[in-house]
Length: 71
Image 1 (cartoon, rainbow, N blue to C red):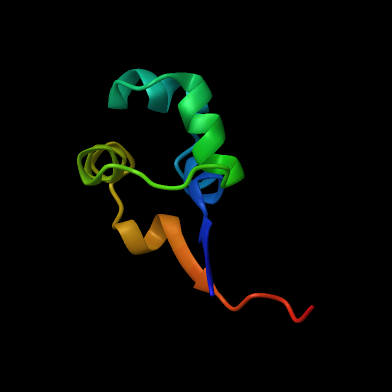
Image 2 (tube, rainbow, N blue to C red):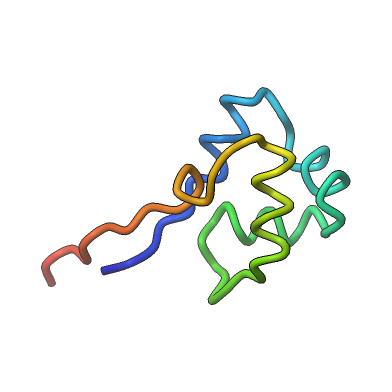
């Protein structure tokens, strides 16, 4: 199983840019970009909670678990 980040989908639904989210959450736009691409190994609950607060969503709206593709 792998965790897929759906932050880009939520940003599109909220008509918000990464830069605006980064400013409101208090992290860099680069970190938002890394989150969107799934190139992070973890996220602090405090940061996740702040993202959810700003986007008015739940963690499950941002994260999805998918089975790994067969090799």
